[in-house]
Image (tube, rainbow, N blue to C red):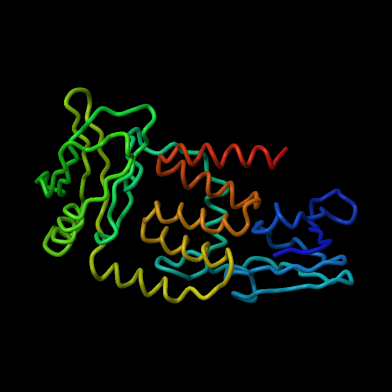
Length: 285
């Protein structure tokens, strides 16, 4: 959080007095061990994760040239969420990752190689270029059909099927150990499209819900915590949705825009990725 005149001093910076921070573009910015936040006349709040000496905390400064120095990183990695990843580490990874375009399939929800919760399952796909009409088929890891939906409206971009959710729930409870599933678009002519994903077991669903319930931060950082948890469960579509929710609160944050762009590119939601790219380019000018 930023307000008023605040600067960032870096060991490698050549700018006298440090770099002046923008309260809109630099909120949500990643800062690193060895850097110093200086509240010249304004206010700042910094989240410090467990990989930094001192543990998880919020540190603040307010005017009168007060400072928030960031100490060297600790040797032990942070432990938080489903697989122990901190929100700060997630933001760093997504911000710096290459802009992967996902799979060649137009299907981006569920994402290829990701995971879903059966009760919330819907299918989304890109509608440009247009797809021909198709039959949607759910198959288990052994190639057996679980459910079908005929005459899908390809232009809608959405299949919200209670039949598919019921089939996934039944497979989750009775299927093989990995609970792998494939969603296939089978057109009347032309090549098929498909992605493979996993369905969380009830135990994994319970672990996910416990981790989400423990998220206690407020504001946009709450959504970063949730994104880190979803990422640890390979629910990449939910990661992208949480970045979007964070951007609703801080829409000009450059680091969050970069991370959200990567998240949507990764799952193959290229329409949203283009929107984020255009916004980022305008702000970077």
